[in-house]
Image (cartoon, rainbow, N blue to C red; front, side, top):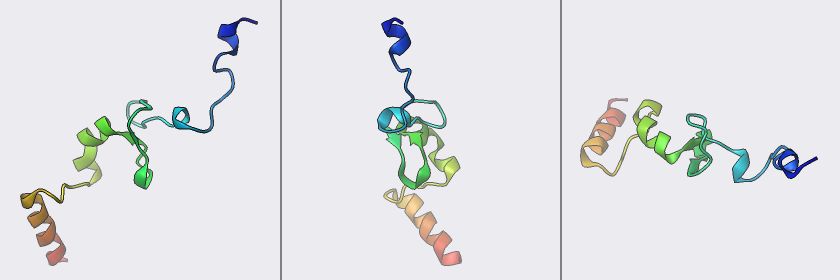
Length: 71
């Protein structure tokens, strides 16, 4: 049994290597908060579709305040 057969033969159930982005499969820059399990690049491209808004932007924050006042 050579080294190539032994390498990564045991499943990894813990640590950063066990978690990957649900969109692209990348394990780097993973956002786990709120159960997103999405890397930062995919989060930036899909943030509006998910429902996140930038509150620091003045126009978006005014839209958010108007939306909250309407409820």
